[in-house]
Image 1 (cartoon, rainbow, N blue to C red):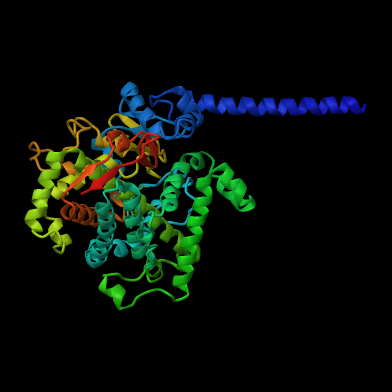
Image 2 (cartoon, rainbow, N blue to C red; image 1 turned 180 degrees about the vertical axis):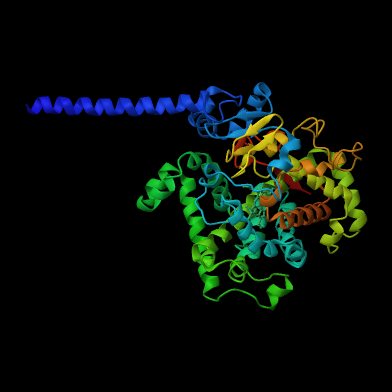
Length: 512
Ligand code: HEM
């Protein structure tokens, strides 16, 4: 009797599993062939399962961006790249998708890869995002950044002093970590009024550089398995490190920001004369606390997470843009000479005080910086947007309400119709007149994205780029690349920010 009962039990379990499997397959078949996205072209496997993206981004490590480009070549300008997502490769559509005024939600699949759900950056709903962003806008405004001129001069001067040490010894300097130290020191001082002073460390804080790069690379895994984050508090640190060192680094990074936020809330923050002279104002925490946001949006967790986003978003992106631009200037001697000539005319003495407003007017410097942004892409991963209540139209296609649609800066920036000879570093393209009726070229420069969710730190980033390139190239007239080729800067992996092929020793420069 007992064995009959157990056989029956086994049969029920097998039946249940079978039923679930049928349901699962049925749903997938429905989604691929009959669901609302079935009409969009693309590989059926990508439409059926997220494992397709997993293969390219997790197993092959940051390669889906490139596969998506290949798929566009095969299937056309709009394709289905996952069970729930579409992708567009047509530069003209960028300002429509990343609209300033139309409702644009982010995608949960994208934002869940980060372990900070309470920030404006990770806010899915467009209405809530607008309120949160409005509270932060004055803190990041162009006028505010203009007042930071003394702080930026001070920081870039510090950078030049470190480079001078290497000039004296003639030792090659790996510049990406050095720029990461600069941009982190700037953004921490700006955000929480406490610079992390990485530029003062003899070895340029290699752990920090590794931290930001490892955290970025972890995103492809946590995007697919966001529940990893909820298990972390229950796991021993050593186990987490063994699973993925980036996760431990992320937790340490968060602890550090939490400590800074607590210090600020305890009333210990610098607002002394020295800080005022550097043009610094209050911290991002104060900006939020003094804003019109409702009380529940001023909770501790929101405060430290907004600080974390600002520091995380402002460091590596800017360091990457600086490194890429620096490489291309040195890799093209005529460009180097032309830039230097313009800088010498404006700053006859290499130690002249550099005025940001003057730099903003220098045509060639600005063209070089734009071309550097084109080659450094900002975020190399696609950024999804959806309309929560209406169908979006792309040519003859009707995109169903709420469907996440992405575009990718790497594709836009190398579009041959917009940027002829797209793989050539050519600042001149930014100075040439445009054919009649064509929009200005910077419409297609999307490193900071566009619209209501465009990079809020853009003014600070541009100021850093102009000041740093101007000062470093004016101060050090003689410099050359050391055992560095394009393979050391060209994107080979998309780790949220671009990365070259494994094995690269980075961009190394000898200052003479
Ligand atoms: C060259 C340097 C930089 C580039 C290329 C860049 C690029 C970007 C891009 C593409 C986005 C949009 C991401 C998305 O749609 O999910 C973004 C957002 C953001 N960036 Fe930047 N960024 C740079 C520097 C900075 C700096 C210096 C800061 C802070 C001081 C900063 C803070 C932010 C924040 C807070 C957001 C989220 C804005 C929002 O969602 O409302 N970024 N950035």
